[in-house]
Structure formats: structure tokens, C-alpha cells
Image (cartoon, rainbow, N blue to C red; front, side, top):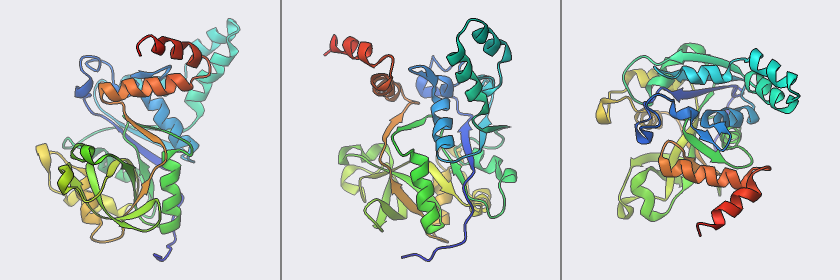
Length: 294
């Protein structure tokens, strides 16, 4: 059993939201992909709600051009709230208030080379020298209880080292993901030896995919600064994590929820079906509609 270390509570999450959303064009030509609705809420609201339900207090969203709609969504809307109250729509008014007040929202514009390591590096000045923090992609939606991020935080509390998200895929799907080469620690926790990028099924070291969702420690920043640009001339977080794994243990938690890549069209459709069937007001009528297409 690894020796426990003194560790900080995870209270901050970084949500990179500066991507171009090219997989969802033309819908994302003018609208951020993070604002695409799943049933009745934008994707990024589900992500923030997961973080808050896990104990996060500060939500740091790294944005880019044409992402102003994200800031507007989480901003106060006194005119709208007052109008809803005046029409007796008090439940909707309260929902709008909660969107604004559920966390401390901080926005940073992405600067530097393209790649998913850059937005993490951009937030370095906001993280304490001994402060662990979370990272969740703005288009990785996990539906489940407990929340995915809480599962990662619990593992960090136990081991005091960085934690990645692990998700079981089929052998035939390994060439779509970064696949973890694992050392089994418990039934649902592994230590990460390495991550093999999109291996063919016969070459995959396991069927554990590494998805978005991390608990990281501040030593990742120095490594990111020194990490060379990789595939497509981008700064990749996974390259920095591989270097970090040579200096300290990195763990991965096999999450219990259902993963949806809502940055892809099929993943977005699947998420709408699952959450539509779970919706208290819409599930019965939606199920009847789906029956027509069986």
C-alpha cells in the first residue's frame, strides 16, 4: 500500500473550453460546442454541476474567441429573473439564480500553442504550490452517481498522487482511445505504467481507456513548460503526464458512470436519449416517440 501523504482538499477545477468544435460543424461555427443543449441544459452546465456536486468551489473556464456565450450563461440575468417572477414562473426564476450562484466563476483566455496542455498551463498562477486541482474537458459528459469527479477525488484522498479517469471499452474500440498500461492496485484502481495512444486491438495493453477528468498536482506545470510540442504541433497533456509518471506514481480510477463524448454528433445524440429518458417531465412522452423508430 503506497504511503499516504499530506494533501490539500481539491477545491478548484479547470475546464478547457477554447477548442474550435470542428467535429460538430456547422452547428459550432458561431456557437461554442460547450453550449450545445443536451435536453434542456448546455453541456457545460452539466460539467459544472458535476464539479459542484463533488465539492468544487472555484470553476476556472479557459476560453477563446467566440466563447462569450459561456460567460453570459453563468452571469446574472436580473431582467430575466424579474420577468419570470412577475409572470409567476418562480421555479424557473430560481433555476436561473442557481446557475449564477452555484460556484465562483473565473474566466481566462487561452494563450500559447494549440493543444489540451495549454489551458492547464495558462492557469498556473491561480494554483497554490501545494494545491491539487481538477481538470475536466468541456465536452466529456459522464452520467452517474456518485459523480465521476468525486470518484477521482476519493482516490486522491487515499493515495495523495495524481488520478486519471479510466473507462472500460471493448477490445475493438482500443484504436479510438489512449489505452492505459495498468498495474492493478484494487478492483477499480490501477497504477498507470504508461498510456498507449490508439493501439490496434492486438497491441493494446488493456481495455482501459484514459478519458478526460483528472486530479493533478502542481508539479505538472513545470513539466508542461518543458514538454515539446507533439502530434499536430500541439502541446499534449498526456505527454506531460507520461513524464510525470517517471517521477511519482499516477493512478487511474475505473469510473462507474456512463461516458458520452458530446463533442461528437453521435455521442451528443446518445446523451440526449439517455438524459431524455431520465427527465422527470419528458421521459414518458419521449419514450413513446422513440417507440415509433424501433
